Length: 291
Ligand code: SAM
Image (cartoon, rainbow, N blue to C red; front, side, top):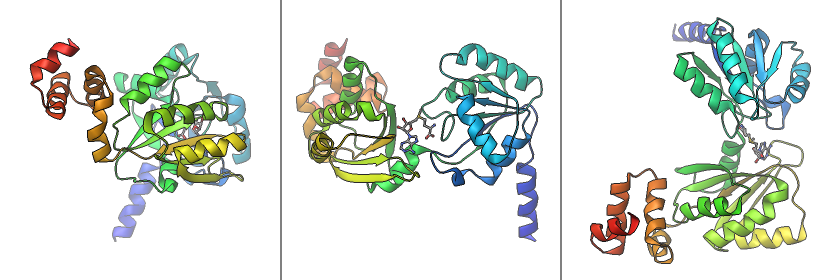
C-alpha cells in the first residue's frame, strides 16, 4: 500500500511544472553521475539556460537531447537573468545548468534564484554532484560542522582579510582553487593557519586522474615544490582546535577579534561582549576601540 502511495508521489514530483526554474546539477567529471531525473527535466523543459552553451551542448549531445539554449554567465547575468525570469513568469519551464556541479554554488546561479524568489517564481532543485561536498566527504576531516569559502580573491589585500577572518574558525573549511593559484594559496593558508594544520587536496574528483592528498599545510607546500599542480582542486582545511582558538586572539587586533565573531554571525554588540570576555576587560573598552 505505502509503496503505491510513494510511487504516486514520485510521479507527481517528477512532472515538469510550467512557470518554474529547475536547478539541474550536472556531473563534475564523470558523465555517469547525471541522474535519471536530471536527464528527464533537461529533455522536458521549454529551454535551458547554460553558463557555457558550447560546453553544455556536449553534455546534451551525449544525452541525445536537443533543446533551445540561452547563455547565462557572470558577464550577462543581469540583463539575461531578467529575460529568463520574464519567460518563466510567462509560463515557460527553464532548466539552469552551469559548467559542472550544482547551480548556485560559486556561480551566477545564485542571482537568478534570488530574482525568481523575489518575483514569486517557483524554483525547484534537481540535486546531484557538488564538488565542495564531494571533497568534504572524502577529506577524512570532521564533517559535522563545516563552512564553504568559495574562491579566495585574486586581490592580495582581500585574500589576506578573508583569511584573517578565518583564523580562529573551528569548523572544517572548504575552498575552490585553480591550479595556477594553488601554490600562492597554500602559502597564504600556511601563513594564516600554520604548517601543522591538516589539509585534503582533492583534485580532478570523479575523473580518471582523481587524487586526494591528505597531509599538513607544510607537507603540501613541500609536495608542490616538486610537483606542478594540474586540474581542478577543492581544498579542505581542518578547523582550529578550541584551545588554539582561545590562545590565538593574542596575535590579532581588537578590531580583527570583533570582526571574526561578526563573520561567525554575531551582531556587533554580541561580538563586542564576546571579545571583552575573551580578553578579560570591560565591554566599553572594546566598544571604544572599534568605534
Ligand atoms: N557549482 C559547482 C559545484 O557545485 O561543484 C562549482 C562551480 S565553481 C565555478 C568551479 C570550481 O569547483 C573549480 O574551480 C574547482 O575548484 C571545483 N571543481 C569543480 N569540479 C571539480 C572536480 N572534478 N574536482 C575538483 N574540483 C572541482
